[in-house]
Amino acid sequence: MIKYQMVNLLGQYQKIKPEVDAAVQEVISTAYFINGPQVKQFQSNLEDYLGVKHVIPCGNGTDALQVALMALNLQPGDEVITTSFTFIATAEVIALLKLRPVLVDVDPRTFNIDPEAIERAITSKTKAIIPVHLFGQCADMHTIKQIAEKHHLYIIEDTAQAIGATHTCQVSGKVHKAGTIGDIGCTSFFPSKNLGAYGDGGAIFTNDDDLAAQMRVVVNHGMAVRYYHDYVGVNSRLDTLQAAVLDIKLKHLDEYAIARQKAATYYNDAFANNPKIKTPVTAPFTDHVFHQYTLVLENVDREGLMKHLADNGVASAVYYPVPLHMQKAYLDPRYKEGDFPITEELSRTVISLPIHTELNEEILKEITETLLEFVGN
Ligand SMILES: *Cc1c(COP(=O)(O)O)cnc(C)c1O
Image (tube, rainbow, N blue to C red; front, side, top):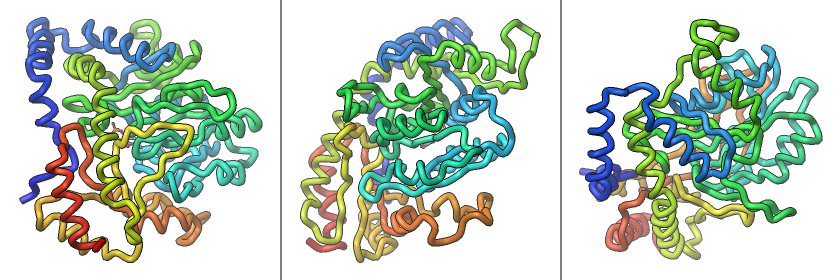
């Protein structure tokens, strides 16, 4: 029996139950299930929180990425550069739109896209870059922005795992929230994400009025005036119930991040100086909101460790066991095993431990002791 799951959504709900129950009941009692006032209210509160001009709510994080790409008016065969070490959604939407995903390797310490590798991958067909702020810390947006400006490329930030994280520019010192630095930011409100709904949800961010207008049309069947369809769009909405829940949880987002950071610090201290464990490295230009707490194992039998943890009631997970270029649906004659050595090595050696808002020292002690029993000190 797993005692400690990767997340504890029920425990988190218990603490905000009266507020959430009342908000949900209010939506039901007005029966305003689609585009109710709670959607606009959440949109506006999220705009304020992020310091961004436009938030466009949508159905999920994958839709957010797809709509962002659709708004850029790219042509089939145009190339979009992204990381080989991410969740499939990032590359999936590129492929779905008949654009060409161009993969690049990551920084071995932060697991985020390597800006130098981006620059090497640029061709005359490159139109956009999708950096992913993986596991909760920002990619090197200053360098990525410089590259994008030099080559006239769009940037779409995939901030599904890093909502609330900040990025401090190494040069100007300016501080921005993740997802508000490039042309467009995309996030997911999947229940286990840092700002999780009680179902699916997503949002798109931009400071660009024209892109915002275009994306509002795309999410709504390509329609600016009712029943006049100027573009081929999609149907992607955040429903009112989810918006009502998210608006309550948004007020707690920073406190949730602190709880995750505390747990991460406990883990870091417990594993410090262990020759077989590399704890997560946070880049100097970002904070880390620890969507995942991910270790790199050195000469440890990962399967054996995961079994030992599970036998003792502790969940663990591997994000991600197969690099994108080795996924069956994405096999491509341009790529072969060995092309992205850092991603490939990480896919063999990473392990993520439970991290969420409901951990305490007692639980963390049990988890770290169980892990060290297997790995040794
Ligand atoms: C979760 C996630 C998505 C997709 O979000 P959904 O809401 O599940 O569609 C996209 N990119 C990354 C990096 C994610 O972690």
